[in-house]
Amino acid sequence: MKKTCLAIAALALAVSLTACGEDQGTSSGGDPTTGGGGDELITVGFVAVGPEGAWRQANEQNMQDTFTKEAGFDLKYAPATNLDQKSQIDAFTSFVDEGVDVILLSATEGSGWEASLERAQEAEIPVILIDRGIEPDRTDLYVTRIAPDNVVVAKGVAEWAVSQCGDSCNYFTLEGPAGVSVVNERNTGWDEVASANPQLKKVGAQTANWSTDEAKSVFETVLKSNSNNIQIVFAQNDEMGLGAVQAVEEAGLTPGVDVKIATIDGTENALKALADGKLSFVAEYNPLFGETALDVVRKALAGEAVESYIIVPSTTFDSPEAAAAALPERKY
Ligand code: AHR
Image (cartoon, rainbow, N blue to C red):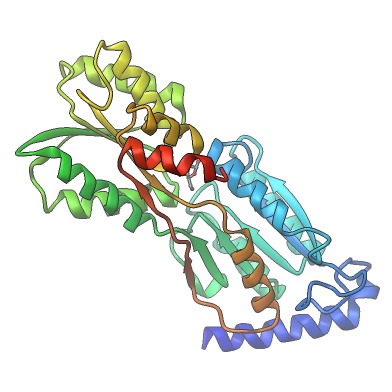
């Protein structure tokens, strides 16, 4: 039902934009299903996160490299101000008022989006979630979410931890910021495996806000307060895992031997650290899905049915050899 309504809305949108493009003075007067044709461009409002780390840089650059004018798009990139959700909501509202053809949203916060999404729906502007989900998950208010499956990725990390643990091991989790959808999803995936494997003993969890420096500081304290008796770290992104490596070395311990650190993202620095034996496991969370997003935009504007969650394939790296072999071909 939802997809049919959307199809009608998108068709109406396509017709109205075609009929009224000149009157509105927008750049999207042409057929929004074909990338313009001639000088008509599809206007895309990208409500983005902005500077946050290597993964985000790769993801948002890939979007900008994909939605080009040559491909028929006018991409309006709107990064958040200091990760602030209000700046994102303001940008979202501006895009709705401007009458863009479609909005891409990478939410800095999981909650607080319903009013904005309802406004976009009233304006018949399709919204596509990039990477981050929203809570509650109002699938009636957006076309689809495009991301790797955080629950599955985190389950893979936990299953690796089980394989390393033996009869008993203490672990600590370095989390991303509270309230971010992917943090909750990664905890869900890890906990699903850990709850079935009591040999994994949780010492604690704390946010280090995706930051290497903050993760180093947090984990230094954790090691001191647990007499260095931590065998595994689940770092929910690469930067925090690299911070944990620094903390382990500061404590006079050997990363990869005394403490095994697993991370999520698969950025170049993490694979280099894995190749050097400093990290022990890296789960890719593939950021390069601009082409998928472009295909979804065309389908949404053409009123074609789209899955409500498009999973981006991601791999894992479990040895220095695997990392070294992958590094020459890596694109982020
Ligand atoms: O939402 C994806 C997460 O956000 C990445 O794992 C992390 O590096 C980024 O900051």
